Image 1 (cartoon, rainbow, N blue to C red):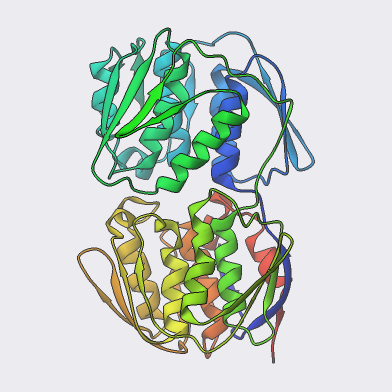
Image 2: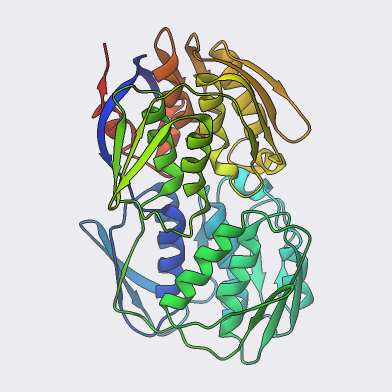
Length: 417
């Protein structure tokens, strides 16, 4: 799918979609409960369908309703199921420990790019505690046997998803466990989101100096109804559109107190000079002269494509650092972002852990290949607002991974003449 996005600033109002990260977590917790859960406010996407598909293969029956998913635990496990995680890293990395805790003896499959994304050190810890796993790095990946309670040691610098997967799984074991983390925790707000979801389902986790204490033999208890939060990661692109527009953009349905780390987009845009204001749960972002800043991306890697575009809309130098993990996303986002900005006429340099961008306030426009990466598609479409000519995006259908209605919502905004 090829999409052409008209150049020019935009104005208008959009409603945020549900947080993909939050819905993943609610779905898994609901599947592990003993009774039905209705998850309201759900926006469907390929990644959410991946988690739903995997859970339905071995643990649940789900029913889709308008803006909601009803999750019905079966009360038993279908062993030897094939779990197709598609392109969803959250699905794969959350459910692998759960499968091992339940002794479900499942086989994982999915897209080649997902298989290539790292599982270590989670992979080795699961084996050390009793799981039998086929070699990582390729699908299918077989997970046999059951892990035992005990001490699980992880480097926290690779992926917060490993920690979240264990936090879902270890409460199911018959005795207590400890998660010990070494190194700097990357994307720590995503772990906070997991803890919040677990608390919603009455699962108790205790923080320790170096990680977490996880009491065993716990039961997930459904609250009956759970409500998905608005998605800060995808709303970030519309916040940037507002920062580029003298008329501004209004975004509804976001929680200013959310545990989602990507709400940091507001502080970053404000630091760059944009006008940001709240009325209840309605956010307004409006243009003011923007200037370059320094960004530590270690906790907010998903914001980097949008921030790179914002840096081009600003004047002066922006440094984005500690973004090494971008190479392990749906595409190598260090290369994808670099190629996108260069394709649109921007001035960008790669560093060991990110970029230096020399903003001039505008871009030329042109054609870019998304490399099948949903966030590159949305960043390129956002860049059209500061371009002198339209933007053409190849493989624009990649947005279905997280935000199938993105172009519909984008086109609902008026292009300023």
